[in-house]
Image (cartoon, rainbow, N blue to C red):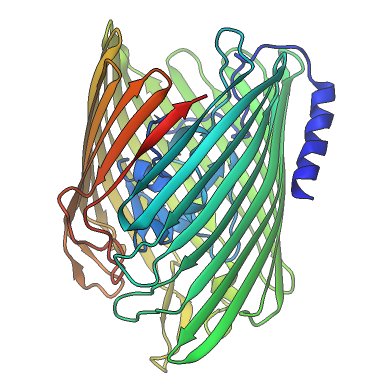
Length: 582
């Protein structure tokens, strides 16, 4: 039913498509190119499979909370705001989770991805699908890849691209992770992910599926040798945009998603099961008016419906309707740019929460001489409690107030290109003032916890980065460094100092890369100190015609560390394999 709906939608779009070439840029649903601080990372095609958390961990200001290696939950915090304030998008369309608000990054596969963008100001990560490129008039392309390594791990993956006609293309991708994860008991994972993408001149359609069965070993303090979790995630989404005239353009996107989580637990001989079934529907529309070369006005509307059925809440079903309306004014005369916006959000739970708020945003940028650029931003970020916070039996609190934050930043960047050389550098300061922070804490009975609003939190910090790259014919090399200092209110697991160093070299079919991550001293949720750690990764690959062999050495220093207390990360491990271009 899921894929038949996809094909029906695609056929309607095909019939309306106009002739074009496949060189047209990929359409995404990400709205309103506004003043921000954005990093864009190319992610494919790579010889060896790299996960989204591995890529993001090297970016300044990002904290990946990892609950135990390849099989563990992984969520993201950007500039200390937590996973619930950091949006994850695929081709500009949000990935939803009304249950907890935390997106498991391990659910998203990068086999079909072309780039990942990190928007620091608007606290969002966008995974962009790579559009097929066909050389020499070919109508087919792609690759197959198989890797294996430590802990009985196997990682098959592949992608096939088809040129369907003038301006039309399709990609099919699939990937799997099979591992025993036996540096801990009950840490195995069997996960399969696949997607189909259709590309037109002004539109794209994506269908995606993820299925995973895993052990849930718990923490070393409270082990769970029998707990199991099953995840089934499906979504169908599409985007379309068209410029009707020099004055007016219209963009539309829509999505339908289903997420099913089933948990089997055993607590001291007491067996239990929890079931969560989420349904999501989303529709977005933006009207843009280009009034002059320097002035643009846009109006955006968004409607979203979420429903969750579970046996773990005080009510068997919970539903939420979210309505957004946004007005954006952009003025860009010469070197200066100003973006002013106002976002109205209304959130309505059936029989529960009813909230509305106006969130303004201001962004200013000025292009200085010699490749320098100055950016300043201020915006309001508002988060209504998720369903777990409100309705979880014995723990939820329907009296919770929304988290309300003002986020500001000021940054200076520098870019220079000269023949074979590329230089980039920048420094950014940020300050986030959060009120009504939601935390879990014990009640009068220390064995019963509940959700509370706990005053305010202030997060301040500085990000720094620098990189250099030289490209000379078929050979190139690059060096990059990133560093973050974060102060203010202590955030669990967030270090005061963190950084990364990366280096790569490629020539004559060989490619070598090294990455060193440093995380400084931190504290856990009880303010107990956590040790700093360093992780060194090396990779090497060699390409012969259509074939590439690769080897990745992970945690070469064999560091023994925990990102989240009680969930040890693996020591030294490796992955090696073969890739064949089709």
